[in-house]
Amino acid sequence: MPAYHLIGPNGDDGISLVNIGVGPSNAKTICDHIAVLRPEVWLMIGHCGGLRPSQTIGDYVLAHAYLRDDHVLDDVLPIEIPIPAIAEVQTALYNAAARVTGEDEDSL
Image (cartoon, rainbow, N blue to C red; front, side, top):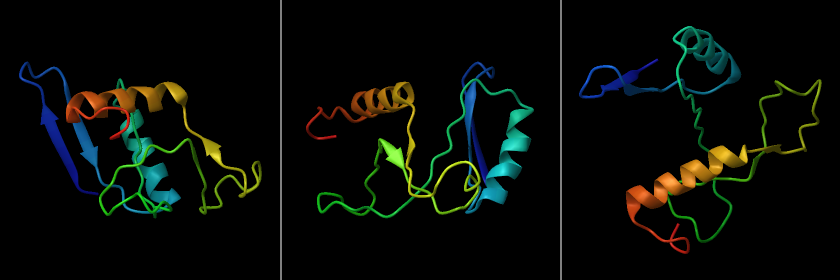
């Protein structure tokens, strides 16, 4: 799995990006490896097809809920029930995107 690391100027902070590929087995593998590092924050970002005519190739989407087709939770949750996003994380990502891009609410 390719990884990229950016260390802060003091050497005591930074971020790591790891491309885990596709599938629940890859997600489990990276979760097991990263968990022992005790990160302060951990985001798993996926990709999907867009459904709105207003979206263009390369757009980032912060969805309110996610449908899945990996069958990992089928025993406890029917596949047609969306998994909701965590509101606090959505708000933080939205605010960060607005701050970094300088875009207003209508443009984001």
